[in-house]
Figure 1: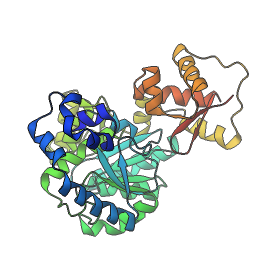
Figure 2: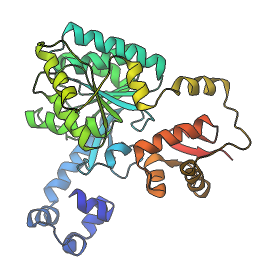
Figure 3: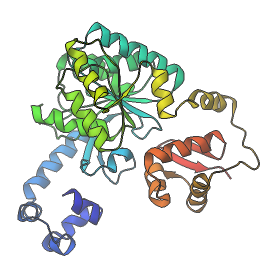
Figure 4: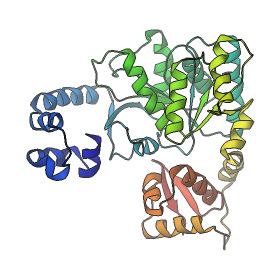
Length: 353
């Protein structure tokens, strides 16, 4: 279905061509063709879902929507649609996920607190993503909220429910300072397989994955594996030898599956985000653009693209310049530091003329 959607460009066009799908996608399976040609029940279900979304302020995001996470859109198994309730921009310049065991120890809790506190000083504007589960997830969300970060929880069920229910108070805070995101329709149970599926969203919408604590096997390690498959950076903190919930982290380091960090400063240096505080101060004081800024060939290419079509999101700039998104975000940051471009609401990049 995803391949068909990417080729056609919208669900409306798919339905318009439902009787000649194989002209568009010759390898379309009989199951896919039959499902689309006999979609009356699915259409009724979609109407019920839309009515619920409108009533409760839930935002359906298709892949063509500007608010859809652009990093996730580039992944081969990205969801066709997401459901979002919140106010955070899912396409912020810096997005990380913090994951790990559901049995977070005092050591892990302290790591999260110190990491988020230090990160706030070094990179004031970062979106922190996790899964709102017990342990590392909920600690990451709560520390993000307390330090003034926006934080998004990716759920394994529809937005008509909350699992675990005891995290409801935190979830309500997140809706006002971040958001809740899912690919699942309402009336979907929080089945075990759904937690694995949601990990790809956590990984795909982020620049980097940070594993806090993990046993030798666990959901956090799955997110790390998916992150690596997407070309994302993976980091973890080492733990004491013999500690059950440090075994997964230590194994990951030993097998070169993650970069060892001991602080937020290590992480920021490895990501090349050291200048974020400088940019923040410059924005507060007003960036003064030099008359003749020196630009690298890649920076010049970005300027040329924006000079032809101004106010573009990062995914469109990536397509037009053929620069991958992880590299592009760094270049856009440098151009903003030089006073050449400015970031507007919705993740739009504007060339200052």
